[in-house]
Length: 165
Image (cartoon, rainbow, N blue to C red; front, side, top):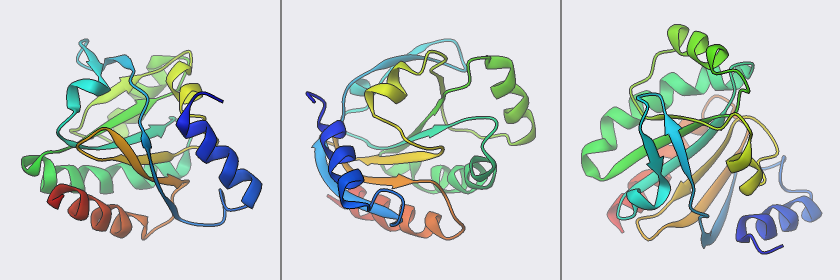
């Protein structure tokens, strides 16, 4: 259990809290990774040090992702000029499925592809969507499991607080 996110996930699972609360406050280094983006360039998490990053794991078959992503796009447009970005990691094995999804649910923030689920395994992602808020120093500060209407309000509250730090 060398991964700090794994330690948090295990602690939450043991407490029974992982799927019963909307978000958990944490403060652990976010493991670095590099993935190919929709534009074809490689994006590395470490290159966003100094920004607040919303790291969102999603899949084309995920109904809650379909609800959440347009709301995240609104948040992205409001806060990107304040040093905020979203990195949305798609875990579909077939990129065409993700592209069909994005045709129906277009977004402006970066989409990254993790077809082998190496990054979702690195982060011990238990469900779709899973969202982490990462501060300017590269520490995962909040983790959200799943999505229900209203979660976007908590996302915004956390983003505003992290952008002000």
